[in-house]
Image (tube, rainbow, N blue to C red; front, side, top):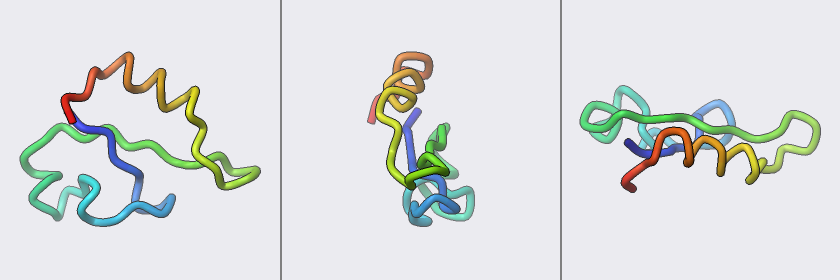
Amino acid sequence: TILGMDLSHGGHLTHGHPLNLSGMLYKVVPYGVRREDEQIDYDALAELAAEHKPKM
């Protein structure tokens, strides 16, 4: 399991997109940015990490 920034939020195809090898080999949990200020919500990201326990 890896956390990767969603393509629509500024991520890259190599961040776990299904068309990329990383998206084919790993379970990818996407995260994004807050709509109001376009910044990463690190508290929400920490919750995702605690829930999914990414190895990378």
